[in-house]
Length: 525
Ligand code: AHR
Image 1 (cartoon, rainbow, N blue to C red):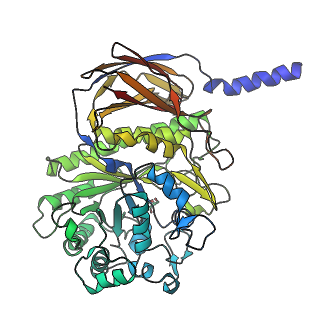
Image 2 (cartoon, helix red, strand yellow):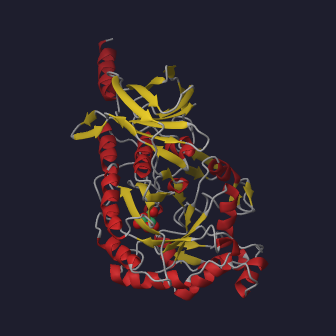
Image 3 (spheres, protein in one colour):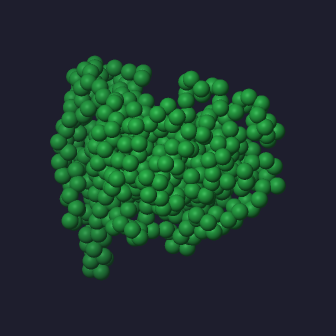
């Protein structure tokens, strides 16, 4: 008996940090009559690089696979992604983009050359998933392509021909080749990335060298789709920095300010990963402590300052905010899972990642006047993924569910929320206890998101809603039993959204949000 009670005590001690201690009260005020910028649906974009099992196995299994597929593309993955209304997908890289030759990936698959993916593990690339397969995937999930062209090992002519192959409507030789490959109609390319991390894996260029090169690509790589000539034009995104340094952004924006008719850009991309403890990455993606949880959230909140610094430079040259800030790589980057190929960047995804995703999406929403696009890294089986697969099995991650819960925020109008976030201290780290955003949807609903960062304590939230007669409210919460709760193939539903009760009295809402949780409330007039 004594032995048992000692064991019981130590068990209790281990659990204490995660047990509900006290329910803190938080008051939020939302005035639905006040509104800010549009929260572009494109900030919910994703990134699918030719890396590890991101494309091969994650998306592409081939038409002869026993895994149910449509023209080689997994049906389970497509069905899951359709639910997210993924606005755009960035492909083929990343670092891979600056070594990719599009010609290797078109035409009959049995004739495509085997090449080496020297960006990611020197593995053989069959090139089975090329341009037409990517476009098929995009069409199946109902998204828009964001194609990154090769400014590293490629040439201007090669990139121009690739975009002609994809977009030419007139019967040019390349349009005919596309038709012969089964696609008579030109594709719509929504976004064109002019290189990737050109300061590092993209060719270790200086800002000035990059700017000179980028102008030439901007000038000669032309979208020929007749449906994109006057409206739905392809937006060109220049490379920006991946560190808080602003010299690169200065060079790009200064050049843009002086640009002539012959070239233009519509966005500058920045990359900012959450790497608690810095490089090389050392934080585990599962079985981590509450201190690690808090440290990770602290690191991720730096995104706000990072964007402010970049925006300050952009505002100098572009006060009218014509050029978008595009965060086309973001997310948690942790130690690769034991036993996995370290070049494949395989990691688990926990409720910590879900909270991180909501914090970042909320930051993007607060910067919506300038941040008009973002791409989480990456879509499947790589870094902070939406989906993990193992042969025929598939599991949806906590991050997937956050993206699903945020779907109503796509193209909504930002509405300011006022609140005192309070503080949550864990070890040496102090964080805001609560984060929140609100927005009005095009069909008149008010959406309210509340993140409770506190690992142990729930919060009792009261919300004053002005500017609309709120009649009903429905809420969903995503939480986990512990800060490192994950979904696995064996237990896929450990972290899934659940409905949560909301009391409504005289236009005032009240609810309790669980510790370590993301809650989205739809308020109807
Ligand atoms: O997302 C993985 C890699 O991170 C990308 O290829 C590169 O752009 C970045 O450094």
